[in-house]
Image (cartoon, rainbow, N blue to C red):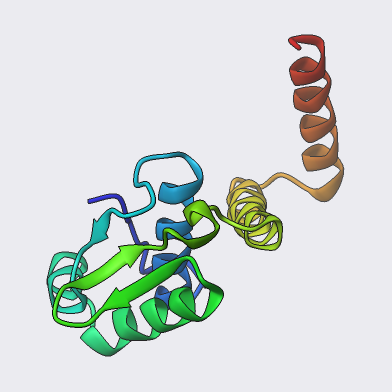
Length: 129
């Protein structure tokens, strides 16, 4: 499956599920019209409460990224071409950066070291363009 959760993260599981779906859409791993796992199937696969998956799917449906077709299941929305909005991309990226920074701190890096490493990496990326 395209979603991974980490029970050790401080991020709520339903947010991790939402981020997993958003990332899969943003990277083209799933595309508009694709069916995503049922609430029950994903809950079993991830070993989480079905209500947690239901909450994530409801939020994704509210955002317009996912739509439910009665009797058929959940699908990546074909309206707006199933694209992750700019706001959702920023939220997803922010969550990824938060995880990365938390990992850096867990490794014993201080804020100055993290800034320096980030600056170097950005400079290398810009040079490669």
